[in-house]
Image 1 (cartoon, rainbow, N blue to C red):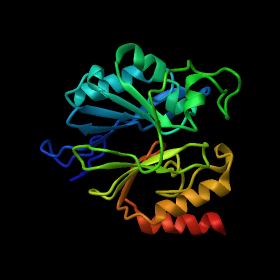
Image 2 (tube, rainbow, N blue to C red):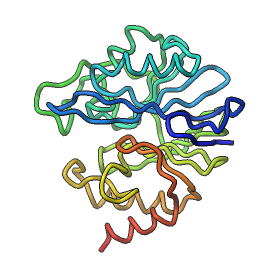
Image 3 (cartoon, rainbow, N blue to C red):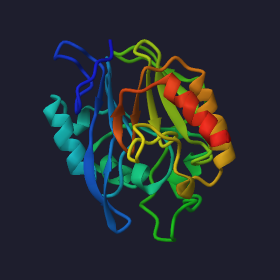
Image 4 (cartoon, rainbow, N blue to C red):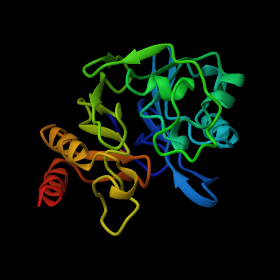
Length: 236
C-alpha cells in the first residue's frame, strides 16, 4: 500500500513506501520549494532527484526523521538534468556511496559533457552516472514495482516514475502543482519542446493514476481524470 500524509507518504508507521521531502531552497536568485522523493526498498532507500546545490543538509534532516542516514541511500535517480534536480548531486556523492541513474539522453548533461539546455553558463558541478535508464525499466520497492516512464519534452530524456500497486505517479516536472490549478501541465517557459511534452502527458493519461507527486508542488490527490483534462487543454 502507498499511503499519504503530507510530508511522509505512509498512512502509519507500519506502511512502507514513498516519502515526499519538501525543501525550501535558494535557486536562481529566488527562494523556491521543491519536492525530492524517497522510495524504500529492501536494499535501502532510493532518492529521486538531488535538488540544487545547497539541498544536501535539508535532505539529510528529512532522512533522519524517517530513521535513515544519507549513507543508507543506495540509488539516486535523477529525473532530468535541470539544476534544481541535479545541481546538488555532486555534493550528495561526497557523503553517499550511491549508484546514480538517469535517462541515457540526460547523462551527458549530468556528467558535464554538455552544457545544460536551460543553463546560463554557470553550470553546477558535474557528477558520474552509473546507469543509463530506458523506458520500462523497473525497480523493486517496498511499495511494489516502480517503472521508469519516458516523459520527454521538458528535457530530452525526462522520466517519471509509476508505482502501479498504489496508482501513484512521481511526475518530476512532466506535471506541476504549484500554480492556480491543483495539477497542471509542464510550464511552457521552462519546456523547450512543448509538443513533445504534451504527448508525454497523453501517455501518462493512459495510466491508472489516483495521486501524483510533483517536484514543484508536492503531493496532489488527483489522477488520471485530471491528467486527461490537462492533455486536452494542452492540445487545444
